[in-house]
Image 1: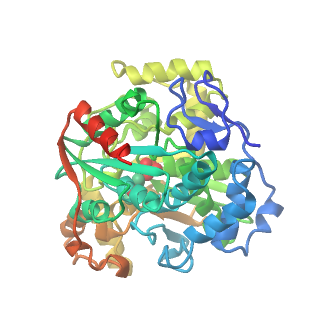
Image 2 (image 1 turned 90 degrees about the horizontal axis):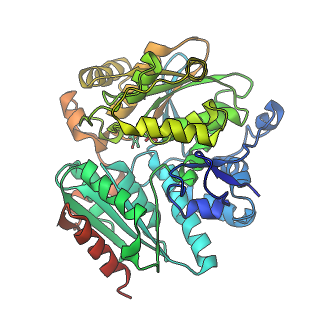
Length: 470
Ligand SMILES: *Cc1c(COP(=O)(O)O)cnc(C)c1O
């Protein structure tokens, strides 16, 4: 059975089930698998003709073995990755932009962003595990857009989960808000906070830190990418896209629009598991803390900037800690000390030169400002007639700037559908694309949300009241 350990080396080892049901480790670290399975090229090659669900089973099962039965996992994967739930038979189709240049379309799921890949599965895994334990939990999360809707869609059918999603009132796009507030289900609560995203996020963090308001009867579960199950589900599409383009017999390059370093960490995992990946590119917007670290060896947290790529607007990339753990030879105490310095925010922190050199072997990085993002959308549209969402456009720009070898296929992860990002589409002078069929009446559906001041005790009282009503 796979065991999970904390990056800071001072928390109990957990099983998959317990990792699924927690947020941070008790020592403040993030959980990672104790050992990562490794596959030979022959073995990976033998998966070449598998449809998405069967490939997902190969990749995911070793991480959940002992907690989730093989047949049950198969059923969940078939419920999630099918043509009705993901509006495309290929689930994650490749779109070609140029010779050896592709976009991996990860936006055919219910909420039109890649987060559906993980959160659709997470909801089923939670219910399966909670049913067996005869427990109920509370999901609490803050969102600037995509995470909230994907989490709500993923857990709306869960019998054992109440879900409370905080978003900054008036600060998410209308499509994004409606994707959260129009979902019906008596376990779903949207809270619009009169404040900004950071305030919402701080309330969530404080609630995870002290869960007394739940009176010991329920636990909070995290749905952001600090939850290992999310990373796990995202490893699959790296294998899938590679196998579709002649991998593992040839290597691939990936450019990944990055915020919290979750999606790209899944690519790094795929590489560790044996998939030949020549290049992984960290593509960021002007919230470029990782690019500054990679290019100048200076880690310094800047204030958050709001951009036309809101899903990448972060000041700190939480999952980077999982990479640092490997770069520092999985030495928990050393990492705990480094993370302490990095979170102090007073000084500029540098990595040891040899660790940074290793990070640079593994990753390239590039930061793209708003004007360049819009230019990229225009450029690719002029070349191909294909409209990129602004996040994906950042990925394509970084891919073109950082590419090392043109004979290697370059795959940019297409993280969202452009219809979600009206601002960017309008700035590019494009007509708004149509909403996909299953969302055609989104703009006229009834909305439900609770507007609340940015006050922790009021928000917690609201959650407690609605959690214990039955
Ligand atoms: C969440 C998100 C990202 C960033 O993903 P991370 O895993 O946080 O790096 C990029 N693009 C879109 C559209 C997203 O929703």
